[in-house]
Image (tube, rainbow, N blue to C red; front, side, top):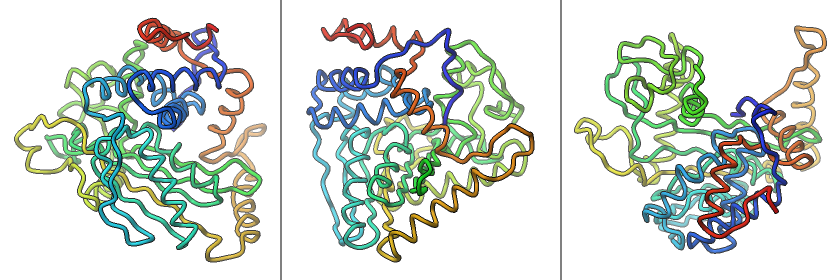
Length: 369
């Protein structure tokens, strides 16, 4: 789910540790306990560090601080386990900050997977959690495979094919897996053609978007991203235009079933959709799963085969001489290595927003120490 790189002429490079510390301090200033604030900062900055800037710090003042300031996200909420069957649990996040709660759920899933070979935490009552891939990668740290999916609660922005009413959110899904000596495999994607963040990023930049991201009420492509927030255009599904959109829509419904129907979270497709109900876009549901392949086979054999699998993909001869073949996770790993060495690239407008937040809270802005 990486974005195009932030153009060098419009980027501010900020030391990674400094950016993480600042972001954590902002959350602490909003009542989030220190350990949770650090975890939330890591989850949010993951977008900027790995190249998915549309899911990074640009959303600090657009999504997360408004959630905390309005009380829709509770800084001190303690998730409650409702059902515990060993390998699988049902948890009510009770409005906790999703950036922290999703990682906590994955930590719990990996502990259960270490005991049972698989661990699944089904969550309801949650809030927006940023990049799904950040939370899925936590399983890889334990040599496991991580799976994360989330619906968008009561948010309805995407329509069924041939449908007139929005029924679903972007419903992201992520799978992360060890790859031997190679960068971890990391699939992190929305089931719509693109997430809303990419559309809004293009609108802020005054840029056109490719045909196929948005469509009008008659299904015609829309290339002006500003028409999304005015209600003149809606997101299309992965695979649109054409028959492929049914695959994206099917994946979106699959996520709704696994992430929301199972735990009893807020559903997009519901009778309220027909009444244009304005229920807040919360009560998000998660599916968080960790699979421990070494519970079934030798750790050495698994790592050897994982290295062979992804190494073979990397070794595939390219069509164009001098080109390279890659897989999801490689661009993110390259971007993260670059950010660790040279600083995290932030658009100047985003850095300016962080400076304004710093002034308001009496903090030192990142990159100005």
